[in-house]
Image (tube, rainbow, N blue to C red; front, side, top):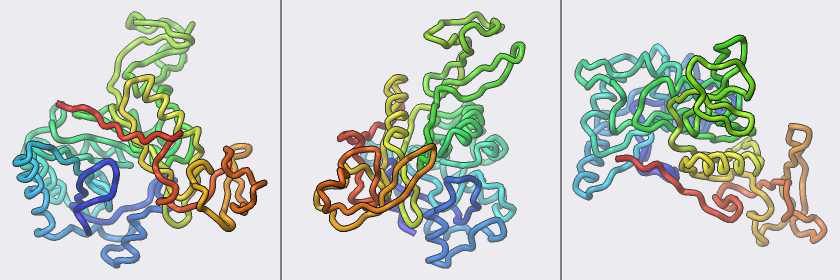
Length: 345
């Protein structure tokens, strides 16, 4: 279990324990479950017990902290890549999670990125001030994030994430399995059944223009939206396609939409990867032979094959995607590498 990582958005990974259970479509082809099967380290799923990592392994973050302090830098630590810190499985004791909070408190030169698919559990599992400081408005070295692969999960998870104070809130939209609008998250029907929405990128609540007045005076009307209140916001978006066996394609427009939403709101955007599938423009002329292709039609993927050596195949043209493998697919979105991170003080 390596501490060094090739994950583009962090410097280190740390797993206080290993094991998890699938909870949504993003989990269908879980790389961590594949690792567990290959290694035999832990049994996956609801009936498998989580397994705590070794005392020697737990010493790693304190070494990184000392190194970061000496260099005058900060390391971003993804916790946990082979588990979920906010998993409520019965085999995870409160002592395990308490030990993790103590470790995080002892490593102030590390930024701990806690990414979860279970944001509804965060509030129940935060430190309470016994042994580690109380959570309060969040710790300076902890970023809270949630995975959202489609609009259903965005609508469900993002409000739960943002209900908890944190130094940085972020979202990983990987694997991106559908179009996302992070500016239109349902917020409730507070007045006369008129809907309200959360713009999770700008941190504003809005109602459709012409809806009944909100109790707080509207701050602005822009286009068809009347902005009526403020809320917490996402300060970083990661997006990427799926890799590995059974990987599903990601439509280029889904990634572009997120990029453009972030640009409009001034939110840092990191495009992690295309995954196994990529547009023809990224495939490169060295690709030859027959390759699986995917075309988005009538809200579903249609699959076939393309002879990449055929000059009449027009495989450089969208919207078709081609399965060429993660390495060949690369990270360019419309010819640009997006590697933005939030600025923290």
